[in-house]
Length: 323
Ligand code: F6P
Image (tube, rainbow, N blue to C red; front, side):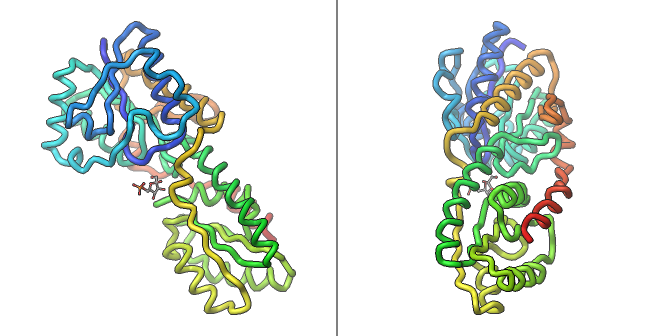
């Protein structure tokens, strides 16, 4: 391994820049060459590659988004696109690739390595945190803090008017953001895709909270929940509980932006160094992750096929603390 490349793919996540910086600096530290691919896998197909050095990544550790840009490449899902990507890598004499991204991006890395025998290592980067093989993905901590800040603000107005708020947070297939921010924001109820048929329970709870004279009610809903989203849910609840004044807030993409927390910066730095050093040492087809504060490696295939488990203890805490 003399020359490796790094790219970010899929939805951007705060902390990706810290990881890019660490990959670049670790590679330079070990006296090897490092290339940055812009716009994820699409940049490999379109040959958007630049050589980086230790100074190329100055002043980015504190920045959200990804300095290499990102993309959800449809072309890379086709064999023809991957063939072009492989040609580009060969043209630049690149020996290995670090892919920072979520589920779809790691799937791409796995297929690519198996198809062309090209060494790839993954770093989990998604605010959704829905990756098997790590307790934390890059961006999750920052996103949850952003959501909590918003929930706190909504609480002020909700309690001033004694209103019921449905707050929709990101999480296409997973409820990690909803669960953690719901607990930290003191939500009345949390609806996540991992828990089915919760609507009747929610109605019962809301009736009880009225009887208990609660002044504000905040319900956090993951976008991927089976309720069909916060607006739909609010409409149905409103029909059955006419006594409530209901408002809906969709937090949307503000959850993906902003300066990364210390946690995501340190995590990105650790994962970046780990991934670069592993790749340079000849290891590949794994994702680096963190479990019990230790860096671990999980085969890419496993990270794609398995789903991280929802923490049952946290579900119970949410239930108890919202009485
Ligand atoms: O995967 C992260 C995520 O933010 C999801 O929570 C959300 O459903 C999706 O990306 C939105 O993607 P896009 O920005 O492409 O609309």
